[in-house]
Image (cartoon, rainbow, N blue to C red; front, side, top):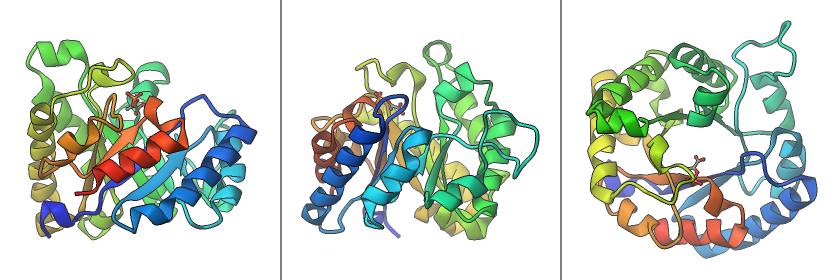
Length: 255
Ligand code: PEP
């Protein structure tokens, strides 16, 4: 499988934004825009957890819906949490795991991220596992080390026969919500490292894994990133809030 035969995959992360009404309206607009992509790019969207049911209903089976987080346990004394089983019941397809905001603000770490990835796979859903270095880690020359540690922890939880169910999102923390996206060369350098770690764990199956880039992706900068051989899509925050913008990103991601 060559890099360019991996179909671009763009996922919108709506963080703590749209409520039920806006979620339904934006999802319906996304669905209406899908035919124009002619199956040459895939889209998913991750609304606020309380809006997942509305999103699944509005998507009508045409657009996969993602959750932004999950607990790794099936059940138990975990006030305020939800499990993979609960997401499955709602008709959710993907789960974003280990987003840098979860790592920085809600104590997710390599161990819990690995457990969450495992739970998502065991429950039959699809993980989008996030990794990425902070600005000071990059400035101190630690990018390779940090990304390797984060990736190794995730891959230890995934069997080679599950490679095609895994999506990874390289999101340099300094590029998230800052308007400072990584250059195509900076992104490819890390994506190539990730691909080489995937090869070590999965052998030839490494080629099927989609590696998204995330960090200030917009309709006008996605094509240059997607021209790189190991950039297979994007995880998009701010520019995904309007369906028109997310559809334009998906359209411009087509190679
Ligand atoms: C994100 O939150 O995953 C993200 C990449 O945000 P933004 O596109 O706004 O930088």
